[in-house]
Image (cartoon, rainbow, N blue to C red; front, side, top):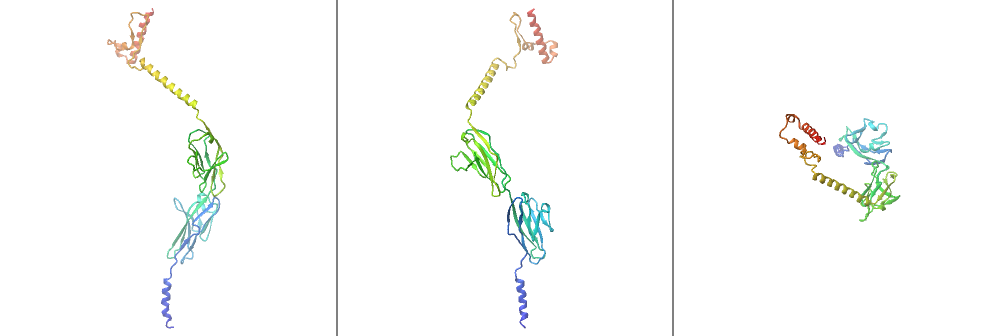
Length: 316
């Protein structure tokens, strides 16, 4: 009995040396993938050191952090379409707007470490939608042609297959292949199309989520280059250039582009009558008082009229 008090301090020392377990938070599914309009379960488990009633909060990360569950209630867009059990949250009828990163936070004020958290990434899967297809109605032989197919809504992104006349075009790996098909971008490219490439083309978008969707088939016709039309067009252009060049030469040869060219009047029937020119009239040094006062334009008009009456006398 005398040794009992000796063991008591040892027991107390051992109890103090035991590891302290602070609040811990974990999840069994850090990445969750669900189809659009189905329910998503975001699991969150915790264990505290002393706190019997820890505070549970859920937040969604984005450009800003927003509350999902706070002070015992769901907030914002989650109100009325989510439920919680323990710390695990179930979101109902999820859409693309619900996709993102969520954080479960457990606060235990009485624990040595008062805060614990875990992150969960939610991906909302979307089945393929009918892709938009760009298929030219016609092209010339030897030209480069691209056919495009795109579905912007499917998650994960769709892969694409092209069909010609309801027959699958396989991605060709041969160096001399006439076309190249990229199943990830949806581009079907012909480096040099030939008449044999004429046909009905359609594109199929697929992913692992739902049923594949195909765009409406469109006809592409490959036509030969009209050499006769090209030769005729070149001939017409050359003819127009020749006519313009000859006209310019003729006008220059006859002085139409000279700035000092005056207007002359010559009447063969009037022998002995001087050669009357508006240019000569303007160069007359003995100008009348009226001529000095008139502006240049009016001055020229007056002397043109005078010259007309002088020439008219030859007929009387």
